[in-house]
Image (cartoon, rainbow, N blue to C red; front, side, top):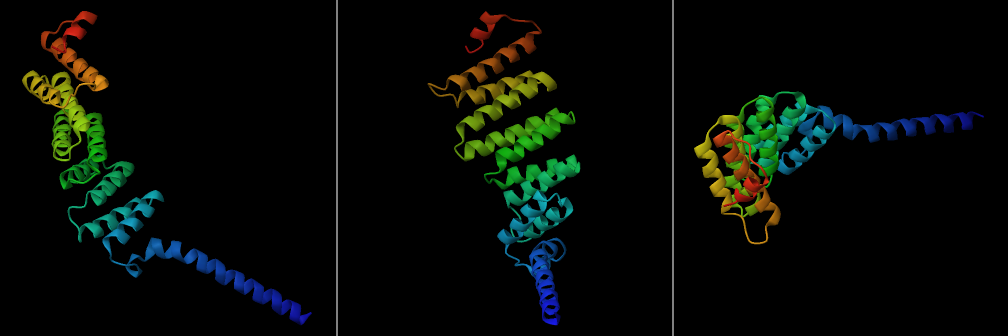
Length: 217
């Protein structure tokens, strides 16, 4: 009987130890980042995990730690923008997203979409137009033709619809034309719609289907 009791006690102790070991990585991850490597990629990996667990302040702290080693890291800036988006600090989210665009990495389109969404939500259409142009310039520099086209179309639409800046709107639409290639049916339709809306806003008139067809000229 004593042997049986001893085995039960030992079994319970082993189970508790294994449970503690299984829990330790998560607890350590949350409260003791200094025990991990200072490698930027490792720091960002932990930041992504923290963000996924909705530990927003901790993820931001980790992303900022990685930026001390790589200040122009678009992934880290986009991570901060995402965390700020979720914690409701939209001003800081926009600022971080713009930093991600300026860094010139592959996260620029996502960063621009985030910034433009927040800027238009808060009525900052001038800022949204500027962000669209930043994305267009990034796309041109990285050979992303269709992204450049759509970014210029967006800048044109924002300028004509919300800013009343028709000269700039037409200038951006002309920039967009450079990226349309033969066979780009959908892209051509988007540009055509942009020009149609621009003409309608400039004149203050309503047009029919024939005017939409002629807008591409």
